[in-house]
Length: 102
Image 1 (cartoon, helix red, strand yellow):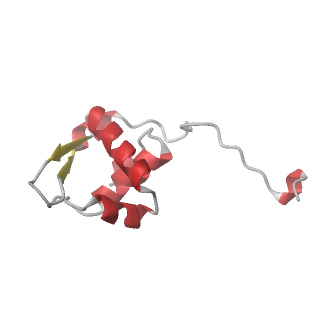
Image 2 (cartoon, one colour):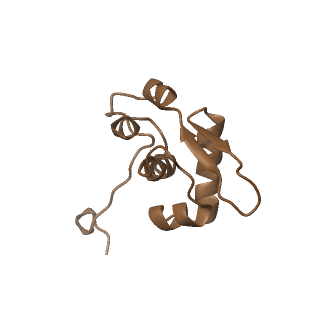
């Protein structure tokens, strides 16, 4: 799981990948379970899973009707996607009451 923290992903993608990694090797949570674990909405989770799959970081196996999918994280691919950990995915804009806001 340490390698995921160093990856250059969007915050949503990173959170979903961390949530999946938290399950260990047998990863088969439902979309609602991932939503509950990450506090993200269904659309955000589905989009993040799609991007992670298309970028080769995650493999998804359909297990049949009325069963959740099986997910496998490609640890080698994740290791190749790590940055130094210092570059932001996007510029953060932080404001506080000290910045003149009410």
